[in-house]
Length: 226
Ligand SMILES: Nc1ncnc2c1ncn2[C@@H]1O[C@H](COP(=O)(O)OP(=O)(O)OP(=O)(O)O)[C@@H](O)[C@H]1O
Ligand SMILES: [Mg+2]
Image (cartoon, rainbow, N blue to C red; front, top):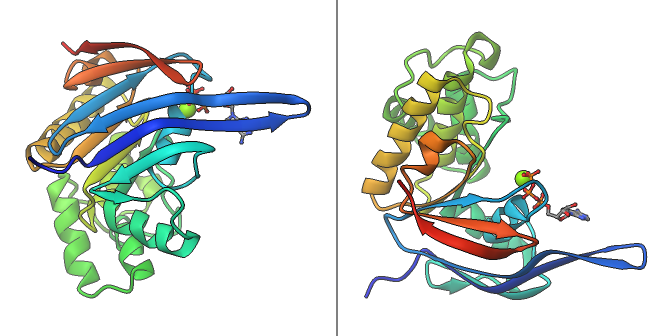
């Protein structure tokens, strides 16, 4: 049996707002196998981003366990958690978050600088080739949205994560660019990455292996895509 990339069990994330307790996540469980792409939908405030933040080790659940590639990260000390996240997880956001003063290839080199790795330029070039971007010395503002997202994906992939977390990655893109991004995700899934995709984009949702719907921090529906 293969080890799942993610096993989230009964995850809760609660916030205190004055006297009120808000359960952004209220018992979320999800398993993702290698080579599996799971779509998450749900209206605004249903807990989609909160869930990605717990899975991506950016935040710590109030209750429940998160196991990534066989390692229980719940309760892991902050320093180890940061290293674990850098080694295993790639994040992609709707707004790209590229550094505006750095070129495409320099943006992709950044995670390797933080991890003090060698051969950065060669590996950044390779990652950009992988996502089909040729203008590697362009600054972000010289690129269109689709190409900016290619740079962000290359940056997420350059250290070869096992799990890719994408929060509305095509929310700002036109149809052609959305199709191109989907094509990249399809290739990554074939290589065995686990992918969790928060999206309302039917083009993307149709390509996932299954879609789960969140409401009030828990799963209310699960269906095959397509
Ligand atoms: N830091 C925080 N403090 C208090 N409440 C929070 C915090 N972060 C999120 N919440 C609340 O948790 C709930 C879930 O928010 P979340 O951002 O996960 O929703 P979402 O499904 O990603 O929504 P959207 O589609 O708008 O991105 C909301 O009620 C939100 O107000
Ligand atoms: Mg969100």
